Length: 544
Image 1 (cartoon, rainbow, N blue to C red):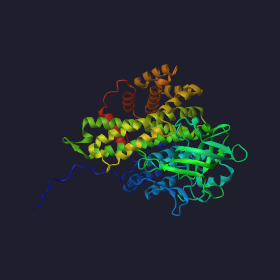
Image 2 (image 1 turned 60 degrees about the vertical axis):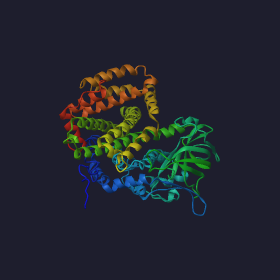
Image 3 (image 1 turned 90 degrees about the horizontal axis):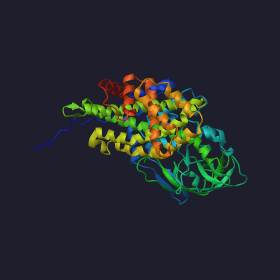
Image 4 (image 1 turned 60 degrees about the horizontal axis):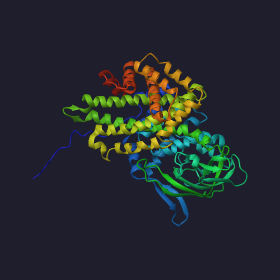
């Protein structure tokens, strides 16, 4: 006798085969507004390819099959290599082909290339985030190396600027594309890099571009398969920055030993290692004692990428939640029609509207750092955005899980991977406290910061009472900023910067709703139905 206990129905199909760019109205408008409208056609093509089921499956496979450390080859010779799943290599090929690692540094780079590159970064983050680690470090290191690459490695410039991904284990000069990693953190220091104990002594004469011998360790040696790392070590003149290649100019392996790969909460597709230097060769970048200054030239860009990456993960989480809510029925209605669920999803969408506006204003400012106002904007709001966006991502993805319910908590869904991925951007390149202390440092040490804030905020003064009140209160606090209140101060700065962008660029009702939600101490009232319709339509690609 045939038994049938139940029929499966009211189960939404997964979100795939969507265009990640065209479905995001806020992103499309920001790209055009900040000078990269010329890239919209290619961004739409990239968004279409990345949104396919095949691309999303590559992201899943790369994380389900983490990298493996190969310390020795079959004959017993030291290898110190890392083996990746084929999905990793396919994702890396796509990133390099789309020039996410070097677009603004090309000789033919157009105005707005920093903004176009930021948009490509956000799109790729929605598919797989671990591959962005080698990309962001290579991106940040390239302008430094263009001006300070040691003489024996001058032939690296061409492959650094290529659009090829080359995973072969061979000297950099023989490869079609190169990756650069970083090695700063040691066991005893963490963020306090001045306490590093790795030693560097010159092989002959000291000075910029000269070879040194390094002895020591790194607790986190990012992307160990990179062709070279920028490493901090103590020289006679103080903490210094060194270019440490995987292969020496004569083709021999450098004396960098990989001890193990980290077993991490998330970011599992990406290899993070511990390393020892046994008289490894490194070439001094800049002067002795300038290590922190050299690394900080890269640090701002990698911090900005942390915020972009978290934003991309949040955008994907919202897309998954919205797609589910449009299909799933509960209590006689689709979830998207339930009043309370509409408020939850609307507030999430409004939060991303603000993030998009500020992050792409910041991308535009990074490109125009010759301008005093934009330079000050980058200095202050890069750490502020990294702190606020990366912190906000963790509860954001958890909220998206609740929209899906139990399905969103199961590994067949992509949300658990996004949730595990979120904390890394809050920790890497400086944790939350470090970012907030950096905001205080910029406020106290860089002339022109307050003038920039007045120029940014006074321009929209009078358009919204919540914004005006918050700006008055912040000016009082900025007279004597206290370290213990640095987090609150950073959050307020970030919220005002977002509010200023929305007051300029979105409809008055939407800007009013955001200011009330983020700047009113009472948390704001519920969003009106007209604002809900507008923001939810834009979150699925419609025009507001």
